[in-house]
Length: 116
Image (cartoon, rainbow, N blue to C red):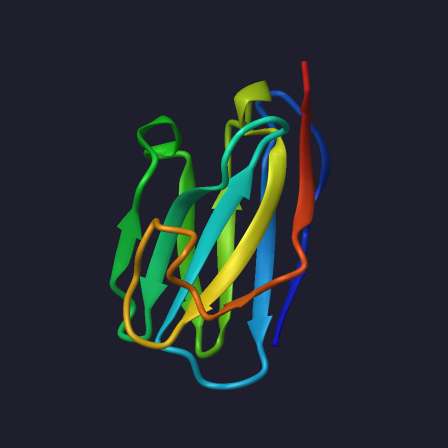
């Protein structure tokens, strides 16, 4: 089970931190997002050894994924309107991937809205 927190409304240029707490040991925790009318896309993933993967060029340098045991975080800075979406964390037993078909478990999603 994954429990997310930390979304909300923020002004353009602002920052947010999302949290995802897993109830059991997991190999990989990833963050995905889905904007209205768009497909779900992988943002980043972190393995249990701390190795990080980033999948979206537009968030390069602005988003940082981190992990403390089975809780993962997504630090988002310099947010803009293109970052508005529902953000989901997802757990995978074997692999980090930006393919939303891969994860074994999903969080409930948290809305991030960036105002102009």
